Image 1 (tube, helix red, strand yellow):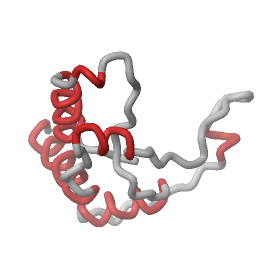
Image 2 (image 1 turned 45 degrees about the vertical axis):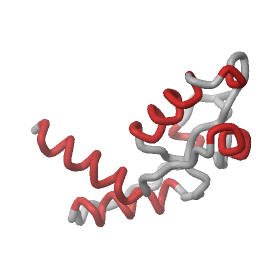
Image 3 (image 1 turned 180 degrees about the vertical axis):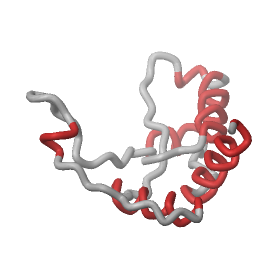
Image 4 (image 1 turned 60 degrees about the horizontal axis):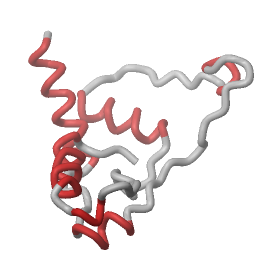
Length: 106
């Protein structure tokens, strides 16, 4: 689901160098599924935070009539077959990098 920008850029560069990729659509992302609650818990732990994670019902978080996918797990078979791509960086590394960037921005 979540993918580091450096992995996405690497995929795009490699695809741009392949004639077979022209006009095609490719999924780029991690195939490791995680819930938003699990993500929040991992971020909180990585940040060393004791913040309370507040769960807001779907109906309150989104306007009436809004529809979204409940699960997102990209199928990267096609891009893997063409260029051998898969993400290199783990979710924990992504979280670490984002926290480091945000802390430097303060």
